[in-house]
Length: 229
Image 1: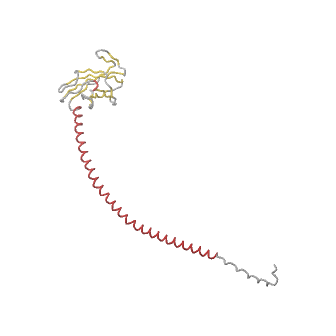
Image 2: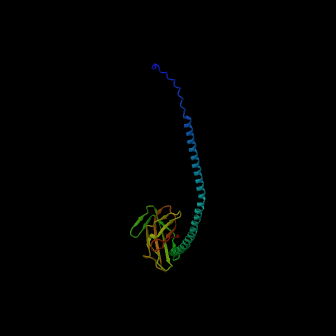
Image 3: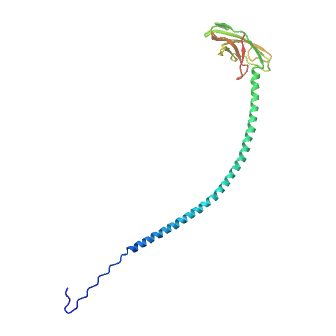
């Protein structure tokens, strides 16, 4: 570009100074912030540790208090249990057993054995049986008959009917009776005696050993064995 005539030319401009970079400043600020954060974290961690340590020291102080209270609980149990259990066992068991058993056992013995005498004849056998109204033929092999004499030596009546007797074989087999003839009707009164002719239909090889008799007038009672012959 030309300058106006007669004007001196402009002096050349000095070169512009380059701008300084601020990267180092930013890095320094960032490092300072990180250092500050680390210090804050360290202080906070130390505080939490101190707090947890204090709480840990408080824990054992509360523990003995609970253990002391646990020592009070057993103090109630030993006082209650020993007082209740011995009183129940000692007062109930001895009073129940002696009162029941002695009253039952003598009744059975006195009913069955002590109040009568009995004897049975030798058995008679045959294939037919004359009942007075008809003559029957054995279906099992043979008829066997026994005469039993009973004497009441007690102070109350004893029973006399067909259902009170059975035949007992030598091998333990029992035979129900199918016919009977009695000298009296009803129970045998004290001081009286009565006879019973008893018959059963048995196998041909049966061998009679005894007659069983239950003297009880009502249900129950025990049967006694009367040997034959």
